[in-house]
Length: 219
Image 1: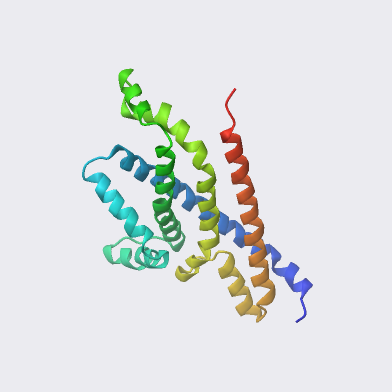
Image 2: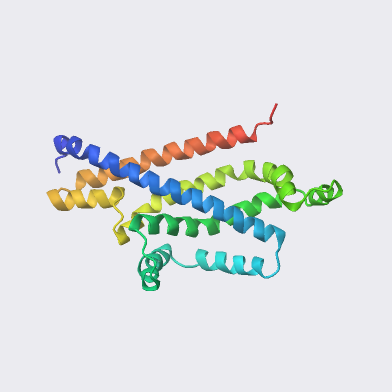
């Protein structure tokens, strides 16, 4: 097998552009997952009658069904109800909803590390539930869970190729298209792997850095 360096440099800009699309999808999906996961986690923490049960049932359903099935449901079922979403939006929403179930468990573990007695102390000084969460619970619960949340970001990034199933042109889809056009698959597929490796390592390192900074006591 001969590696074609000229061909590699020729397709490199296209692959780099596709990697940015992959990062964009991952970033948007993760923001949605983090926000929804926090909402699910807070609902579980407050134990709201009826609503908490529904959220737990939803989280369990999402965690125990394949993301590909959820992706197809979003892309093929919604149009039957008159809801037409671009493939990119379907991909972002599916990633966000799927990983929100996992993020909610991470938030729950963070909440469990905060002494329940602090809720009683907050009531004594007449803090509302929202004030207690904002001023007391979240500042203590978030720093320890930055690392596991970051790990889910990396995992989500590596799972973006599943969006190829609904024609989202991300990194792997681009490599496949280039290979189909040129009948040379080794270079584009290898480049896709290299981009995933480098960007995953960078994201993991950034997550560790932020986690360590958040763990430092404020002065």
